[in-house]
Length: 189
Image 1 (cartoon, rainbow, N blue to C red):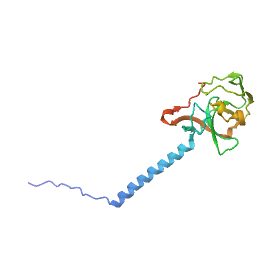
Image 2 (image 1 turned 120 degrees about the horizontal axis):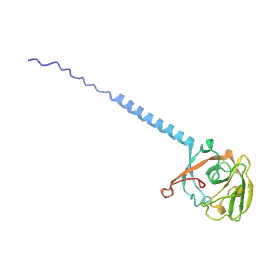
Image 3 (image 1 turned 135 degrees about the vertical axis):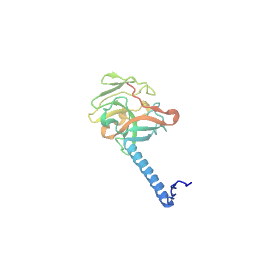
Image 4 (image 1 turned 180 degrees about the horizontal axis):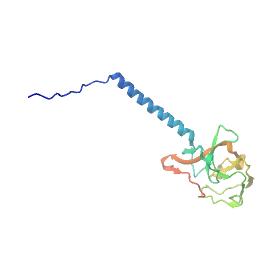
C-alpha cells in the first residue's frame, strides 16, 4: 500500500527585524491619532480652573470645568448662561461670570432685585441679595455680566461691559472635584 502524497507546509519565520518595524509603526500611528484627537478637542473645548469666589455658590475656587468655544457660533447669547471671557481691562486674564444683559438690553438693579428690560430675574443661584443699585443699557457689541456672589464680584457693575470679541465660550460642566460634578444648566429653562 502506498501512502498518499501529503504536502507539508513549509514553516517560515518572519524575520525579527520586520516584526519590530511593524510594531513600531503601530505605536507611531496610535500616538499620531492621540495627538490629532487632543488638538481637535482642544480646538473646540477649553479646560478652565475657577480661581476666585465671584461665582460662589454655583462654582467654587478650585473647580475645573469644560467650556464650549463654539457655543455662540450657532446660538445667541442668552441671559443666565455662564461664560468665560478675556478681562476687558487685561486680556491676558480670563474671568467666569453669568450673562445678565445681552446686546440692547436694559439692566436695572434696585432693592436687591435684578431686572432685564423690566422683567425681574428669578435668581435662585445667587449667594446673597445684591447690595448695590444701578441702571445700564448694554451696547450692541457687548454683554453685561455679574458674578453669582454679587457683593464679592468684580464684574460689569464695576468695570463695564464685556465686548463680544472677548468671549471664550459657554461653561458646559464641572468635572473636578468629583463631589462638585455638575452640568451647567440654564437657570431659566
